[in-house]
Length: 410
Ligand code: C6P
Image (cartoon, rainbow, N blue to C red; front, side, top):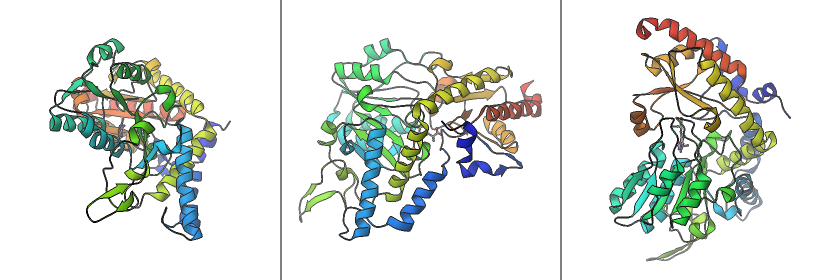
């Protein structure tokens, strides 16, 4: 097994100093850094394989198609899908969820039907359902949040009813770090005749995820948060759903026969991939999957759990810090917090001067910010290349911020 330092060395960007300090990158929930094998694979694609896919009859086009479809198979294996046909390449989580809402959602949700979500959803898994409910006269229901930022299955049992058509939930909250019981929620949804859409943007990169074990109907995630490039993501969908869904984007690549006044579509997943896809992105994502599989997702998860426990412990050394979200047992590898009396942007600016990169803002979860009673928060998020030394650097920098803003903290 590779050591933490060996892994860190595989990420070229982390080798450079930042503001004269060792770069401590604690914003992987926003986007992860990329290891050399992924960067090299994308370069090799453009150096040796680049052509458009699915249409060329020449050898180079065959190579590009093989690389592209090979990546689809890698992704399918990575998340335990039954077959590569259940993997739709998208631009990212946002596009995947919008696709389900715009295609299946528009068809199956009617007036008075219910869509059940939670207040901890990222805007990407909130607005598509909100707008669908508005367009259809459907009821958007929110499961209540407990004070520690978790949801209870008994509430799901009560709120998901025979009128519920869709349950949409984050596997892991990007703000609270809460790991939601999606497997149990899938069981409840199915028992009531609803389907479940899982926003896995913050889970697939960090823990083993098996879609057949979860028994979710759809699951969306982004390549750029899991060591892959930006602009590529995945929508997993059970074949029984994908095969009956209408396309959302019309154009090249997705058709079977086009006549003057009607057209027919390719099978899923290609019918959802209108236009030239992000071929290099998919190939890079395939390389990211290989890389993470090489490290082992169990190892990634275990390491992040250790780091987050360590961070939660050390943050207690600064009593002026308020931490949001559940305890270490039900929390993924991120910590959201505020330094009392100080705007998180100011905290992040002081940390930046120390080479520590964290995110500050509303994290695309404005309803959740209102629930927390905070205009914004700071967030440190961990990945496989972070070390305890990084957490120590965070704590040291926070101690400096506390010192610097002591007048405001009082
Ligand atoms: N969250 C964060 O810093 P895209 O932008 O489509 O790759 O992913 C959207 C998305 C959806 N769901 C969850 C739970 C997410 O965390 C994100 C992205 C980033 O928290 C950017 S706001």
